[in-house]
Image (cartoon, rainbow, N blue to C red; front, top):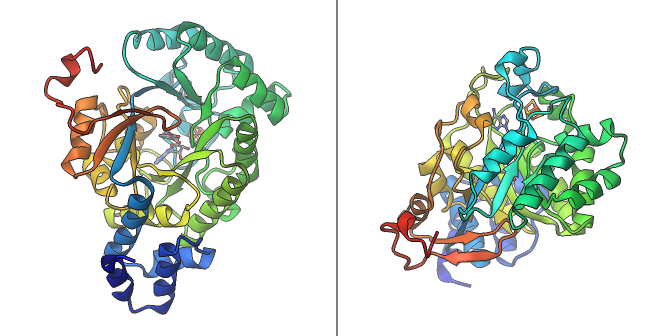
Length: 389
Ligand code: V47
Ligand code: SF4
């Protein structure tokens, strides 16, 4: 074992933490109690060094990003999640938007000839936008641009549309997949434990429903992501409970690509009185995620909500993916108070951001197929170079 990492283990006085670190270095799985102990007793620098060790073992310095764009079909939502600025808009629909298939295709076509590889579609749950509507949308996108990977719909949206169409999850997922749905994003997970879920988002799909939809997608050969909304009323053990349920499903199916901790933002929602987590808590969350989610290949920091500098910092705390060059990033964060009110970063900026902290930028497809390693690529005039764009 390298002396540096042994010195790190020896630097901690707590016997439990020492044992947890030894397990991690032996590449053994850590337990529920170990996970809680890391949160409660691990110092930021110690957790960061350990998480970085795991990250380097898995990926070296590689830091992935992709070139994608987002579509939010509507911000009107029948559900009433207390942390979400969208939930207020249902009663007040004139403040909301709902895009037609034609309007969404207009967005898709605006990327014609541009080297994006993925469209990410998620939004509120609008009662008029049903299964038939989304099947038509998926088919229209695939007919126009078959190579574009469609990552769309959370189990919240899917559960609602399947129930309305009187389809089982298996029937509904198969239909969506056949229409062109390639993978599922990680949203809607929040905190699985009912003690918290019933307080922050009681009326949408529950933990078992969320997990069942992802499991069904995996059984159809699709991949997916998973999120956790942290930094509000949950305790550390609720976070570990959430990660434990995901780790278990991943053992069964192996269908998850990425775990994405999402920092609760407190602007304009029914939980605005709750202070946001500190950057120290944010980095601890990433580090413990890397240490606990041993069977998840990737940990992602979603830069539009975390801010660019904290996204850079997270690369030293276990994170190896910073999502994409999102052009018109999701309004759900801007509305909830993210620093990034007009979040757009082109490829050159994203590559520079990763290089500034001495990591290796690699462009990926949605399924982590490597598209281009940017080591040594001159980013001067990059956007004007047709060979690279
Ligand atoms: O599930 C809503 C979150 C999620 C707030 O899979 C909030 O690649 C913080 O899941 N503060 C949807 N978060 C977005 C999402 C996502 C984003 C980027 C990439 C991927 C992926 C998935 O947004 C919701 C909810 O947890 N959210 N309101 C808020 N106030
Ligand atoms: Fe609707 Fe999703 Fe917002 Fe909840 S988080 S209110 S389900 S858009």
